[in-house]
Image (cartoon, rainbow, N blue to C red; front, side, top):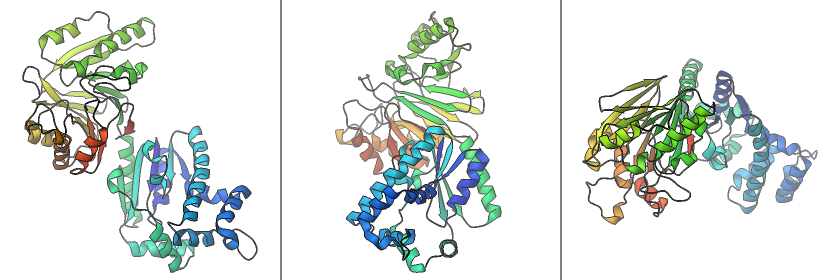
Amino acid sequence: MIILVTGKSGTGKSTFARELASKLKYQYVDIDAIGHKIYESSKVLQKVATLFGKVIFDENGSFDRKRLGQIVFAEKNSARVKKFNRYTLQVMQTEIDKILSKNNHVVLDWIKLPLTKYWKRLSYKVLVISSNDEARFDNLLKRDNVKIEYLKLREKSSIEYDESEFNFIINNDYDNANAAQVLDKLTADINNVIYFKALGTKSPFAHAKNACPSYFLKSGDSKFLLDAGSGSHRFFDMKEVESLNIFISHLHRDHYNDLYNYMYSAYSLKNLGLIKEKFNIYLPSSPSAIVEDIKNEKLTYSNVETFEECSQYQFKGVTIDFLKVEHDKYIDCYAIRVKNARKSVVYTGDISYSNRERLISFAKNCNALICEASLLRKHNFPVINSHLTAQQAASIAKDANVKKLLLTHFWADEKLSNYLKEAKLIFKNTNVLQENDEFYI
């Protein structure tokens, strides 16, 4: 996991980052320190001096970082400052890349990480904010030994953060006893993250670069696949099939077709001695003919059973629950909830807006709602349909107070930006899923 801890200067982010790394036994990386160190390179100094001149050196000819800082903070949008930022960021990222190539478990501490190439691939994001800006400024004046005018320039040039993009927010009240409790909660939250990967997001058929609905989740040692749509197995690491638990939301072909690929793959891997434990398939009980066909498959190494709305499954630290929903009157359809000690993820399957209130209750306060958004409002579909519009998905997410909305089940030829735009008008923290998207919830 790559964990980011960020926040404005003086919020205590570095203190929290160091303590967090120590608790998790991760490597702590102070990126500001890397930024300071790059000026030890004559090549870097020469490049910076070309942009700003001799004013960045003191009377003895030594590099003066505060002098450079005054120019950069004062000329935030000037052409030379933009060139400077691009160049130094490139140099720093080269150094960060070296660290990440050697260690996959690090805590990165930096104000500007949301502006870098690392932002999307970060596993877990922590924002530290200040509950007392007067105390924060007093700390900075003492710590950095600078004048208030310099501090105001630096503050004016600092970036603003979108709190909805963070997994955890610390409101630092500068009380050491409270800080220890917050750190314990943060550590517990990180230890209960759920790994997520989208294997398929389109319907009703697969294209060359995408597949029909399927989502892989992992919490601790427990592994789950929610649906196994056509072509989705191409994006799955088949060595994970051992002890995998596959839950099918409903028995439409675009949601279960690849079950047979998993069954035959497990059969082959078992015969080769590459896996020992069977995987498990959980299905709705209708249509019974499809259920029997899957149960009667001979070339497999799996267990198969059916579930009902009242069913509940317990795995290592994880509970699976179901909500029966309306989609197709001829088959049973279910929303599925995956919940561990601190996190919950709800998957809607295919669903009608007639289920709105029941789904809001089922998904209340969940960390992520994987929600079908097959339709767009601009095409004038009836309000009550067999699928949701992106707008309807967003309204459900908003009223359920979910942390993040993950839209899926798209018509393959429609631009994803159209779904995102429609949903974000109502619920800001929305993402559109694409094949191979992976992150921690």
